[in-house]
Image (cartoon, rainbow, N blue to C red; front, top):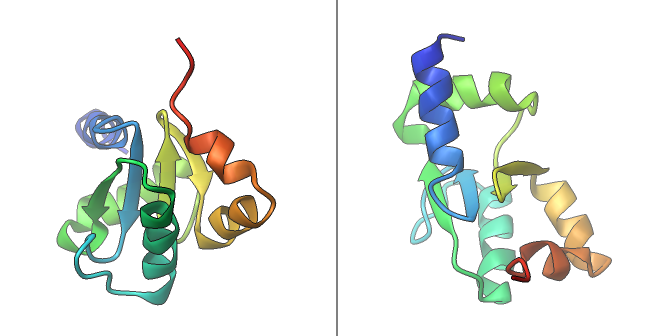
Length: 106
C-alpha cells in the first residue's frame, strides 16, 4: 500500500470518533449487514460518520489490507477497528457496545 492511500485511510478512520465503513450511506444502506450495524448505531443514539465504500474502489480495497479485515461493514471507534456486523451484534447482545461507544471520561 502506498503512503498516500495509507494517509487517506487514516484520515477517514479519524474523521469522527465513530466511523462506519459500509455499503451505502445512512439514508440508503446497500446491504443487509451494513443496514444491521447502521440500525444498532442509530438505536444507540450516538453521533457517527459513515463512508460509502462502493463510491471509492481504492478505499474499498485498501481498507481491507490496512485493517486485516476482509469484509464490510467495518466499525471504528476512536481510530480502532471494532469489527464487522457479527462482532457489533455480539457486543450489543452482551452489553459491551454501550460502554465501547460511550464518550471517554475527561
